[in-house]
Length: 223
Image (cartoon, rainbow, N blue to C red; front, side, top):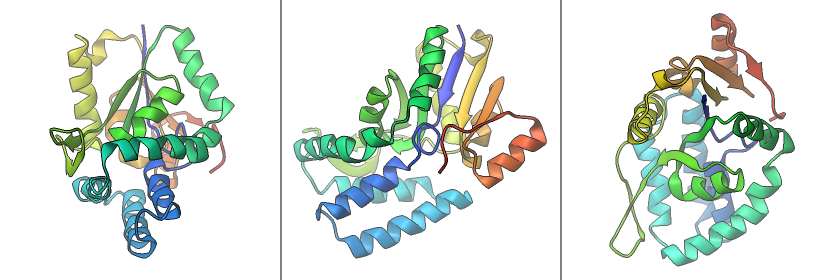
């Protein structure tokens, strides 16, 4: 058995699901568009530059979620999936995932996006295992606005992946081949420890790093 890990945004999706969730909330009139959009755009630029404070960003997103009861958010997410995510899922992506499943590989998504947003997307992609930032919940299952544990960004993806494998009674060394598909230089820490890193729809910084280190590039769609 091999291990196939995938980033989510701009790797399996041609969009950023976190960013699009914010845009969706603005469009539906649930949050103030002016202040949210401006701050969200700043965070997105920081992410692309590799300077994002993951906790600050996650608590910005989760703080917005905490203003609504969980039942309402779950209903909104169904609408978000229908309007935004499902139209963005491409046959090339589904074929790649199926290729790994057919080979008997252990497949997982490892994303900095929070679990609330990412889990239904992973389900729609047919991926059982998800490593994502975990929101803190109160006793009634509503979001507190804080993150539970550490972010799954940068080196945090490596830490969380090791912890997930440990729960399965496995290590990276148990697999003949380990893959990690990602578009972003933020994911170089995890890409550097797998046997087969694949720069997927890579940004400029990752493309340069991949070329320098002889990593293959894969283009599933055009951003």
